[in-house]
Amino acid sequence: MRNLSTVFTIGAVLAGATLTAGTAHATPGGPGVTGKVITQTTVGGKDYILREITIPPGQATGWHYHDGTLYGYVKQGTLSHFDATCASDGVYKSGSALKEPAGPDRVHIGRNLGSTDVVLEVLYVLPHGAPFSQDAPNPGCDFQ
Image 1 (cartoon, helix red, strand yellow):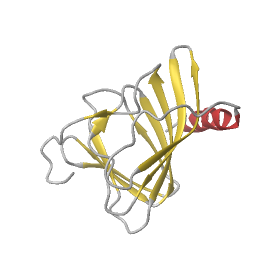
Image 2 (image 1 turned 120 degrees about the horizontal axis):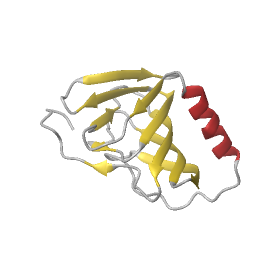
Image 3 (image 1 turned 90 degrees about the vertical axis):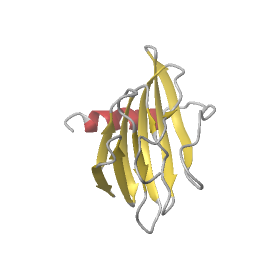
Image 4 (image 1 turned 120 degrees about the vertical axis):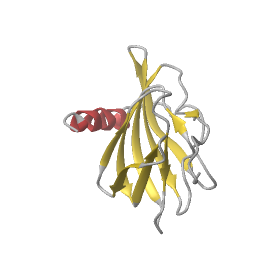
């Protein structure tokens, strides 16, 4: 992605800012999946939230979509990402970056099919006050 360095520069600025973390909206997915807000700010009606998400082996985020764009960096492990057709739309190893577009037509799930925790650094760019994600039903896949 061409502008990924810009996005992570914004994330670094946010991380360096003196801000209160605020209340987390919702914790993603299955048992043991955790999310921790590192920092957040609001500019021009958009919330910029830097968050660390950990997905233990064998767990997943649950089916969901976002009201804004997300930019992620795989800090540890390998994230397997699937779209609403049940097809893999990416396998992201440690050091990889990914982008999740906004909208209810972009339902997806992130799964940890490996043997170590997946740790993601995620920059959420959301309309002010929007939740981190919106739950969605399984679109008919034979996995959760």
